[in-house]
Length: 237
Image (cartoon, rainbow, N blue to C red; front, top):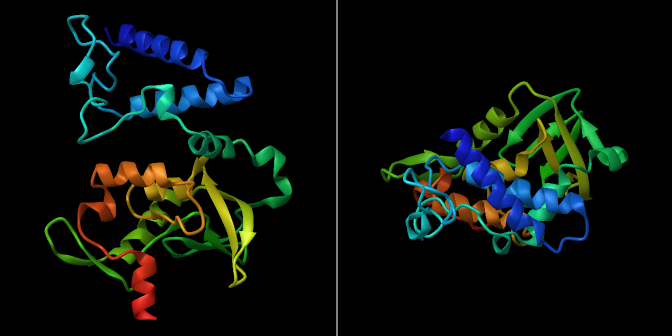
């Protein structure tokens, strides 16, 4: 039954993606991958209205997609926007951005959105995390150092793996503003997905979708109350 459902899911996605108006086959593949990953992250059987329940009927309005609360999977092409495609496409940039890519020989995590890679200070592009000394309230209304928690989350994501960063810009402090990867995964996106970083809309909207999902699912910072990092800095510096 499980294998049958997997085949059905893939068939539906392939049908949906076949009519996508992206310029080339590679981007159609990216759209398919985004939908499949979103569906696979849902623990139940009824992620999308077109999925089937045990009696062979479509999930319809009983699907997670039809429920405004809880997990919101991506099921249709209309759910996929250009920003999501571009973000997925970034993972394939290594071969064409070798001059801008920095790989690990030494690494130190400074805080939730800053690392020192091979003696170069790198600010993670498009995200902002609480400062080390910043405190937030958890879901039990208990105060904790959320900036330290975000830092620990970054260390956990990196682990003992090699990190590669693609430079996008340089900020006024001389830091290299970069998108960094571990095991092919966008570290910046992972921090936002898990709720320990926010999309830094002042500079980029690359991670707005990940932030919306973390907020809807009450992950990380979103499980309690917190002051936006940029607002906290303006009051405490």
